[in-house]
Image 1 (cartoon, rainbow, N blue to C red):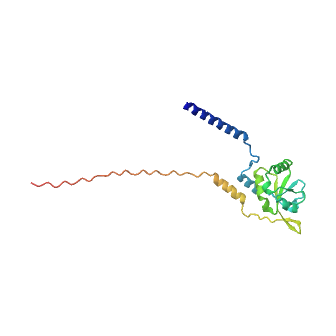
Image 2 (cartoon, one colour):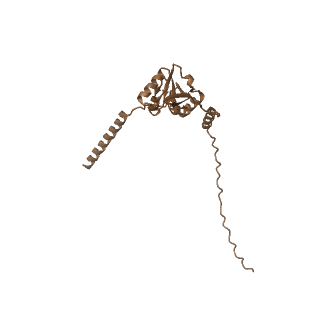
Amino acid sequence: MKELEKTKNISIAAVITILVVLIAVLSYKKPKHMYANNTKSTLETITNNNYFVGLEDLKDENLALIDVRNQYEFEKGHLENATNIYTPEILNESNSNLLNNLKAENKTIVLYGANTNDVTIPFLLLTQLGFTNLKMATIENSYYQNQLISKNDTVEKSEADIKGFIDESVKKASIVPKVIPKKVVIPKKVITVEKKKKKPAEGGC
């Protein structure tokens, strides 16, 4: 009787385990956003190309201006024909659809904010997600008497060769260090020799 109850308990536990696994498999959803580029390839890409555009370059009809500031700042004043996508909300469903549509239409997406630093994070994020039609507007936006004032922002260019540094780092990382085998030192076997005790001298004749 006890063995029968034990068998029933094992069967119930097995059925529950299978149901839990099935529910987990059926409820699994593929992530909407998958990285197309890793950090290394993203850094290589942005150091090989010039992604900056100034205020004078924003009149091209093929450009789609994206303001990454919050809604309040956007409503106070924004560039003509700009669309507001606040940086923390850049990956929600409606914004993702908008960006993907712009990509499909071969539009060049130009990100701008209060200054160039504002667009660094969304630019890197979208680049890692596989967007190649991206530019950063090097402009600074401020207000004077509730009027938006936009001017070119000064971007410091590094004197260091960033690409060369990355290439050298990758090269060093790919080199497999040579393993020099250690010499095996075999300890010498020490043999202890017992000293013979001198026999006492025997008496003379």
